[in-house]
Length: 160
Image (cartoon, rainbow, N blue to C red):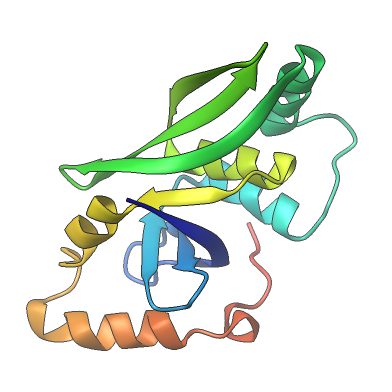
């Protein structure tokens, strides 16, 4: 089952200094942190902040190519989690047909923001991600409570 998610925020993991995209379902009951690369985090941050660059960035280029080929980004789905690696699919509609394209979640999310496409996560991914491997088991509940209680104002501006 697909769960529609929105971006709650973008932050940096204080332990290993890696950017994290925080996804949350519309009801605010489920939170999914996804660790991403610094360049992808920057692409996401630029769009969240509605900042434009003098020339198109990679995700802007991809959006433009899709649009100019008369295709539409229908949705993006974080579809799988294997060995602590998330997988995503970008669903494109072109000439009445839907095509699923394999992608990294960070790229899919950056494209979804630029095309205003909805972001979904397979429920099985959320379930699989529940035992967060980066925290000792005793700290997992505390971490989940902290992620659930995050306020966008707490996240501040994401700086690269």
